[in-house]
Length: 173
Image 1 (cartoon, rainbow, N blue to C red):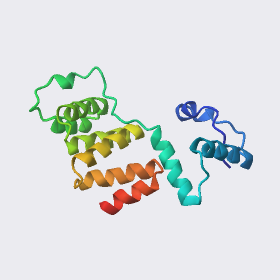
Image 2 (tube, rainbow, N blue to C red):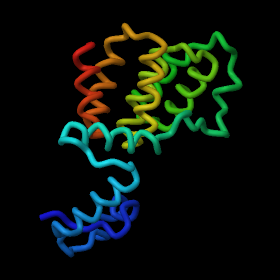
Image 3 (cartoon, helix red, strand yellow):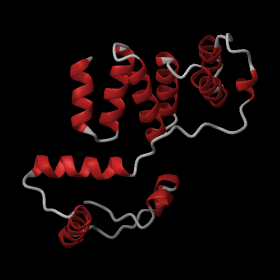
Image 4 (tube, rainbow, N blue to C red):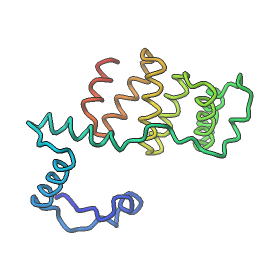
């Protein structure tokens, strides 16, 4: 049975915040009508509906990665090996520090496909899905032949329920 989410953010933080009131077909119909009303046209079939929903969700997606303001790693010299340091930080279980280190890498080297990929995968591990997808897309743009980035992008897209994009990335892989 589907359950109604009164506050989706609270439900993620506290699963007990999920209402036990079941979702009815009329609730789903109302949500669908609101979606169709926002789009201005009714979908022709289920694939058209899926495409419209993906466009609708992407419209609200973030366009630029939100770098952390306080990042001591950005003060290191440009020739610093951020990737190597980030790998060591992850190995030590210091993921938050590794994220800052990788942010410095991609700020100093925006075409670092590996930096974007590693940052994206680390963010995905932290359940920061929209940020992870953005990073993985930037990594793919920087190097369309980075197979590890393509695979991670396919997996993250699938986790984000964007099946068409996931299939496209995985086919390319």
